[in-house]
Length: 68
Image (tube, rainbow, N blue to C red; front, top):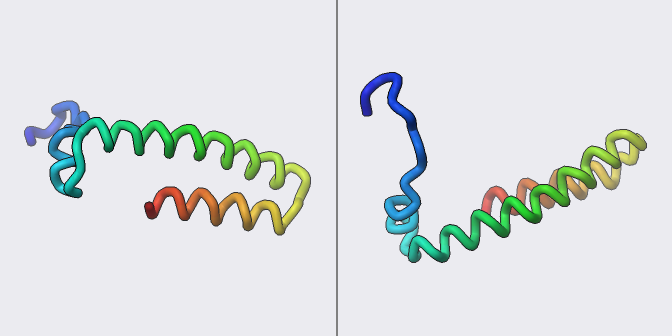
């Protein structure tokens, strides 16, 4: 890739790399974004309340989703 060129993700290529269809990858991305948004809100709220256990749980949930 040339320096300065846009580095948009090629979903078809990425899906092929992990052995799934492009449509399945799109579904996974949407699911991740939806669940991450909820988890991030939970995390922000817990941080604001200094609720250490809830912070840990929300962070763990985000981490788990990202690894999957």
